[in-house]
Image (cartoon, rainbow, N blue to C red):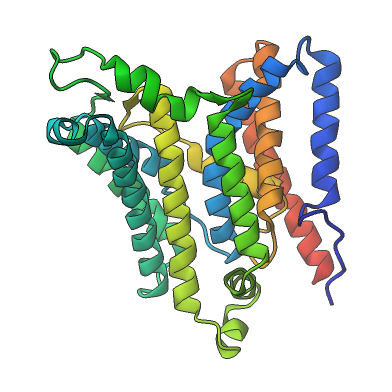
Length: 336
């Protein structure tokens, strides 16, 4: 029999306590850490990881994994940039090409997620193998269609390499770098994703089926859950949100990078497991994932402010993942 867990919006109190302790430590040791401008920077930095990690939460709750979300950043970034600078689209709808490009990017990410889910659900392949293969396939496609070169957001009517300021500076980059009042647009997008993800996971039949599948797939099937449909759906959601994160990343970088998003899958997984979602499936929350992303963001920002090398940040992130999984294993054995 499992012990009852107390939580706030599905977030383990231990995760919240850890987050508050980190903030207090860096606030005490780092000058200007709690300044509003620093918090704005933190919100922008964690936005992309939060968006991707929400999709990863759905997958991991079903005891799956998606290693392709990092490569999706590169692929979707490339096709979004190519669609944005397409001369036919620009000639017909002008700045409306932004919406077309974003739609193309979202569609690309969604299709990749659907293919992952189809392979896992219909072909009964292991999620790790499927998404590892997709990680390389998608990255390879991005490299091939760009010949390994970045795709800048440029005006097709101008000489090659001349930036189109009306879209680049005032329209497209607004997605990642703009503000509504004092709040970064990227942070608002992430917040909307978190709220909708939380509602979908906790207030719908679909969400209950996701938890049931992760808890015991065979029992879920016998109780009438369409296991195949749920598996395909969670991977499709993960791909779509990875595509959305890629659009924000492309907006921030002003270009589509075929190598963009390398390692993002690890940061997303870290946010999910640090936020209290079990890698063994059946438990977890979107709100916890958001806190996990903030924890990783606070650590990275605090280390940056102290001038600590990014190499150390990678080591610390890896250690956090190890400790979170170890703690999850200990809890699981106790409850078993």
